[in-house]
Length: 384
Image (cartoon, rainbow, N blue to C red):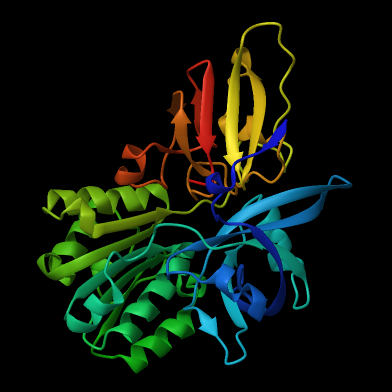
């Protein structure tokens, strides 16, 4: 059931727009960089802060049937706006084992392809204002592994180009030199700012001159890097992006070294398939004669209502998708934050959360892909 909300209840939020692929560049044997042309009339919808991501939506053939697939990818370059008002955004897509969208993109994506792209979102951005950066001799450190370099590229470029006094250290972990995404781009940045950018490549399957840069990053190695190579006490802000184990290891080590958590920005990446939802329809639930939760939600100025059987234990997102296929989501694994909404009434129980900040949780925001009702009625607002 869909009902109009009062005009003042509607607010702007991310929406999908169809963009055309303008360029596809090979980065490694299993990763590509994809550029999308942004027409002048959509330029405002695709303004973004370095570190944010976009969700991509495409119908792909699966077992002989078309199926909608959504995945989130970080923007890997600074925003580009041309004199005529048009622009460009770029993402990097690394092939993942069993990754339906990533494998399709690496195998077949070419310029001219049309893909639905959601307006940029995400909080993996610097807390420092541009005006502050220009005045300070701040030190920033980024730690990335594999495709975790994607948002870091945009952040590092911005820090170096925005502030002539900022210095950046990048610790980048990969298996071997052939796995390094943006290898030439990083070398170009280093050549451009030799005294302000230091890149420390850590390779787990290749011998480096320094033992600390050779082998898999473990607790001992990260502590040696943080205390021997970097000057922790001078770092204004930290940016961490990679698999959960690495990000959590660095966060724990920084906490042990007395670094304030407010100075540490982090984002996780996943390469698997989306979580417990199916396309834009939601996973079907069996009819139940037992009690149900009532889930109301506001989205784009409309209110939707759906009954969710208690026995089904389905998430707010899955229930909402059964009556509104345009409910926003991407990873459905608690990582990207695309399905963020605010609880207005009722209570929920949230599972994984790798996307929401502490202050967002305190204000009542949840990840609907991870939240299940715990009260008879729940009202969430995607427009909040």
